[in-house]
Structure formats: structure tokens, C-alpha cells
Image (cartoon, rainbow, N blue to C red; front, side):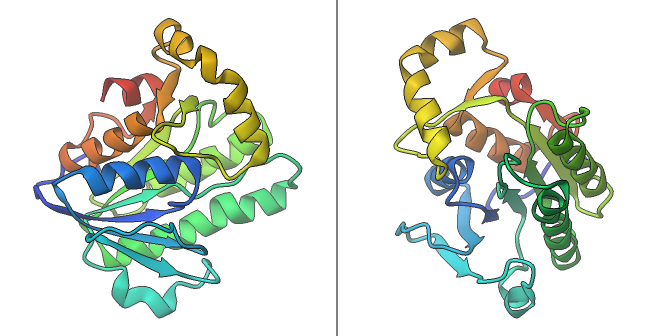
Length: 224
């Protein structure tokens, strides 16, 4: 499962490119000369223009069958799609976090058996809280799929960089309040605080060269 990607030039799919993490990942993919094509999949446009960027706008992400011909031939998928569990029932959170992710991943594994699949999870996944259990189950079942390689990213606190903004108002307020002390936190807690730039570059690194283990904690992301 952890075989390094052999091809130098890669074609990348990004799910959730309008979210905070997805925006950062998209930026790094567009800047990387080894990435020849980036296709984003989501309900809304990234509102970006680049020679190697294409967009698939799908009203229903649970039904990607009309786009199957556009979803094959990729070496990597960066799955950054997710929602906060705040105020959600376990059934609703499971539908978005587990059901949608696995449904999409199974389709991509069939269309792209040589793909490296990278899933953005979170620090604390696998714990006892509702979201941690659902995320843990999602990770477990993703690692069973027949991809060339699959990696679970578990970042903790992520600092948005280069104009990246969260779509969630409460998160924007949170990051605005923390912004003045972020550089200090990164120095004091280098294994806990990452940036959107680091997450994007780390994803590209595992897609190109692999990594010794399938689950990457925040310290692994920073090191990469």
C-alpha cells in the first residue's frame, strides 16, 4: 500500500478545493512543476484560472456517474472534503464523512488502480467522541481499498497562508484571534501546528515518493 509513485509528472484530483485545506492544497499543486493537470470536484467553483486547472461541478456528489470519463487517468487524489460535526447528529455526520468518502473512493479505486489516495482526517481520530469514531472508521475502510497507496493525514491546528480562508465563520474568527500568536505557537509546538502550505506540500510528497506509514500525524506532515 505504501509504494512510492514512480512517475515524475502527475495528474491530481482534488475534492473540497474551496475549503480551507483544499485551497492550500490547490495552490501548491498549481505551483508544482511536476503536476501537469489538476481537476477539482465540488459543488461550487474555485473561481481560479490556471492553464493546468479544470473543474468538475457536480450538484450531487453522491452521484458522480455522469463524470466517470473525466475521473480516470489520475495518479493522485487529495480528498479534503469535510464538515464540522458541531450541531450534527451522528447519522448526518456519518453520511457526509463516511458514506460520501467511501462511495467516492471506491469509484476512484476502480477507475484508477494506480492512484495514491490522500484523505484529510484530523488529530484525535480514532478516539471516543462521535466525530473521532466516524473518522476512524473512515480511515480503516479507506486503507482496505485497492489503491496503489493510501495515506491518512491527521493535522492538528492549521494556519491558513497566502490568502486562504475558511468558509466557516466561526473558524475565521478563531484564526483571526490566533493570528498574532501563530508564529509563536509554531515555534513552541512544531509538532502540533502546521500551515496550509505545509499540508499541501506534504500531500504532494507522499504522492510522488510515498511514506513509510499510512497514517501521518501533524509532526509527520511538518517533517515532510
